[in-house]
Length: 231
Image 1 (tube, rainbow, N blue to C red):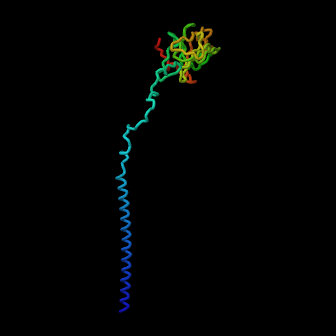
Image 2 (cartoon, helix red, strand yellow; image 1 turned 90 degrees about the horizontal axis):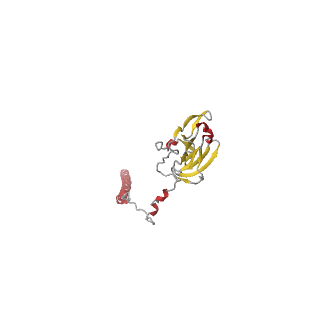
Image 3 (tube, helix red, strand yellow; image 1 turned 60 degrees about the vertical axis):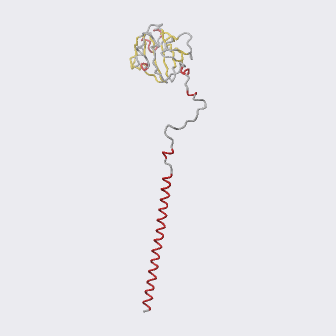
């Protein structure tokens, strides 16, 4: 009898201990759940109470500009700044014919040079004209150089700004024309040389003006800028 009672008491004690352990686990589980719920509540409050970005940013186009101490006077363009004849502008550049009423005998093309007796690139436009015919500046600019040699005869180079140049070969430069002089569109810069004084590498072509256009150091077709309709 006593043995059976002792076994029941032992069994009851073990059952009570297991129940206590289950209750303890449940208690800690409830604490963990409560902690999670509290953390979630804090996050939600932070989200809803923080102002939205769209409400904080300034409306596009409403950014306040710093005040200009001189009232914006520096932004006003002085019309006189565009009066320099040696500087090219954003306006379209159109050249006047350097020889009035002349006949174009050769263009910018691959051609047969009868003087040199070979085919080569003709790097300009030839205007046939009688010796002594006036040669005028195709565009306003400054005199870059005035030279004379056997191959090119008399030659004048004008600078028009932004790396744009015009070359006038087989001419007699106007008296008093000097490097650095400013010239206007249509101003006389010389006359067509006599056939005997024409540039040596085009001697057989007779009296004419050899006209070239350069962008930097590159020779380009003068037709890019010339107005052949102008008389």
